[in-house]
Image (cartoon, rainbow over all chains, first blue to last red; front, side, top):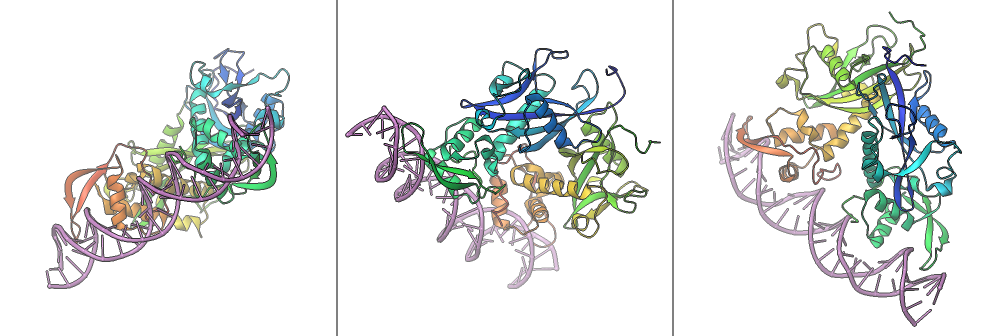
Amino acid sequence: VEPPDDQTLHLGVDVVVLTILQGELCTLVVRRAEPPFAGRWALPGGPVRVAEDLGDAARRRLEEATGVGVDALRMEQLATYGDPDRDPRRRTVSVAWLAILPVPSASGVGEGLREGSAAEWVPTARLLGPEVPAFDHRRILVDGLERARAKLEYSGIATAFVDREFTIAALREVYEVVWGHRLDAGNFHRKVTRTEGFVVPTGRRHSEGRGRPAALFTAGSEEVLHPPLTRRSLE
Amino acid sequence: VEPPDDQTLHLGVDVVVLTILQGELCTLVVRRAEPPFAGRWALPGGPVRVAEDLGDAARRRLEEATGVGVDALRMEQLATYGDPDRDPRRRTVSVAWLAILPVPSASGVGEGLREGSAAEWVPTARLLGPEVPAFDHRRILVDGLERARAKLEYSGIATAFVDREFTIAALREVYEVVWGHRLDAGNFHRKVTRTEGFVVPTGRRHSEGRGRPAALFTAGSEEVLHPPLTRRSLE
DNA sequence: TCAAAAGTGTTCGTAATACACCCATGG
DNA sequence: CCATGGGTGTATTACGAACACTTTTGA
């Protein structure tokens, strides 16, 4: 459909979608059927329409890949990748986005991906290790992951990984999985509950097997955390 | 040359160039001669060539605007702006970049802009206040400024504002101007000199009028500052 | 010798860490 | 009643803010 060596510049979007599955950080990827990079994983993405907003384009590609509407999805721009050789077929500049989904089972998105959808959740570590993704998508993934790690410190982004109502322990698991190390439960609890606007108690409780039931919270309104939860502290 | 309502998507770059002139933060802008936004200030920028790297495109546009080579220039990507209505003529997506120049008199760039060049240094405060720039360039400028402010905290970017050899007081002025408030000279000196890899003493000294001569430093190799100079501290 | 800027010492309050310990529930 | 995870108290330590003080120069 596309002349292979046309002298036009193409603009696309690629989306790094992160979630936590069974205590492991996972990324939504699509197995490529066609060359180049046939058989390799790729981030969901595709061309931007001429009159389409960039954020809408990213959202649309994600919905097409999963078959599920993701209207309320929190999405932010990562960076734009424009190496002239990044796509061997034609000059394609790609605006990358970062999206975070709550644990798929609970949200309707995710494990319940559309039938026949090529999209799958793959542990992020595998994509950064043995199974090198197509194009420059490894780089994009690394950048997205680093953005997510950084934003845990100073924004309420962690609440995007969990259900609408969540326990402090669930929130702590987000930090532990994304940062890759354990945190002191007591100090974490105090930090989170004392940080103005981060979490709001609902009054309800949640009991999961043994142990004292945990209080349930919803995400607060603050986008920026004061003081931040530094990566070194809480360690 | 360009059909006004063609159904193609155009890709451009825009550059936020910051420097400090006479103790004031300034931005490099071009007075627009043609509609739309004739007479308004705009950031240096223009279309990306089909086979051109994005960073090279930004560098090239900047060189064309100033008439001066800026090879060694530190430049980083800011974000990409793609509102379908941002350019009334045609759909133009723009990748914005942030560049920082040392005080122009000392570097060869800047006040010595090319003859006939439309580019000028304008105090950033004026562009954010009365003299609203063309297109969405106010937004781009705001984002660039915020990036610069944030990066002063945790990166050695401040050294890009000063000469190759500089005094701690000169570095402090960068922070004071960009952050917009005074800092304690003693605490700043200690912080900067104790932060591993930020500044390297040259052994030389610099005397400017009255007062004890200041030691001269060059920029260190560290890109990331440990510990960071937080905006609230040192205040 | 005085003013002015560079640079150092010192105190004090706040906040992070480590970890002890109590709480509430299921088995 | 004991194991398990939720949640709080507390001592120690580290670091930033404030500011007094010494140093080194030009006028």
